[in-house]
Image (cartoon, rainbow, N blue to C red; front, top):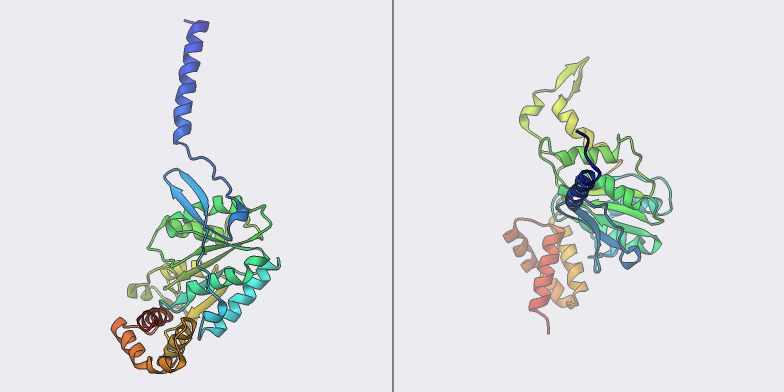
Length: 291
């Protein structure tokens, strides 16, 4: 039986309504933000919808406020300077002890080079699957973009792990020259390492070769061309950072000298002599001694 014209009209009307309902569920392509409204952005995903949100008041840090990490500053600064000039530069992985300035150093690069076209896009670990979309969104822009992944670590077999690995190196789609990735982590290889994996190592002609599990974990961190390691601060370095921040907060020199004992007690209570702990003590001390 051949359908009549009215039957076809009803069928297509129903089909159109069904497609309209499906459109509401399908993810829309992310819209570009107002690029002139900010120097830092955050990738946000809510269900099927994703967008770049401008950060109106980013937390910027002066390079001069970073103490006792001069070598790390010099190396990341050189890499970032090459990048903003349009020259070749490497993705960077900053690893090491907590509170030692890894994230602050990335923010300091934005503060230093924003007026030369550097922009920062913060991407949470759960959104790393969206990296290809972000890359395509900025591919034709004249600015230079750092995709910033802070406090990054993976468990075994996480899909975001493979997404990051693909974008760093190995994907068929080339990453544009105006995009670079800076990541921070407390783990050198970004993934947990187990004692049992050491037993997989084998000896070939007197050389020790790690097992497949270890090789897989190393393969991600090796895709970062620049590694920067941060170490716990000794007592003198910790006190230097305390003195710096007390001075920045307007505490008189005489009071700064007297604050040493309190600063050490503060670190003892926190179980850490890090730059973050030094900054927190300085804020507390300056607040208590404010006129």
